[in-house]
Image (cartoon, rainbow, N blue to C red; front, side, top):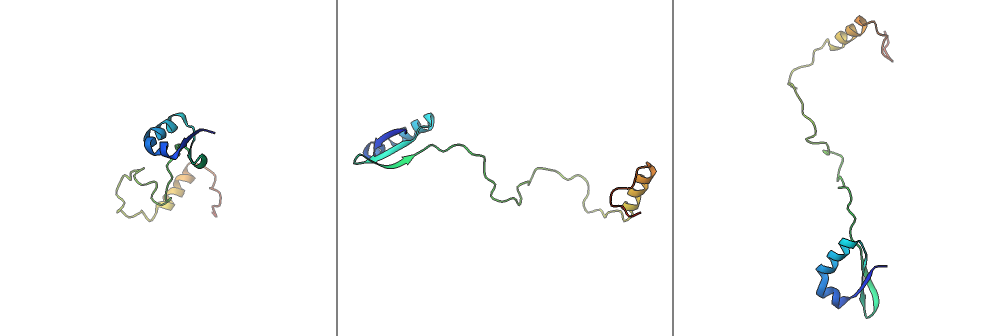
Length: 96
């Protein structure tokens, strides 16, 4: 159940009681006129929550080379020539 403390004692010893609660993981119930008024529990550490998926990978990779250079218009033909050169079967979905 945890420790029970009157509201006046909690008011006087608030920070010490919170430290004790965090150390031992026990809940703390604050009472008024002998009746339970509120129960406090230490926060368990959780993984940080990502607010949005957009931008969450920012800064995790580096682009090398010049992105302003145009792509070779014959890149696909060159790729297929290398494929054929190695004697490999056509890739799935190839309509040759």
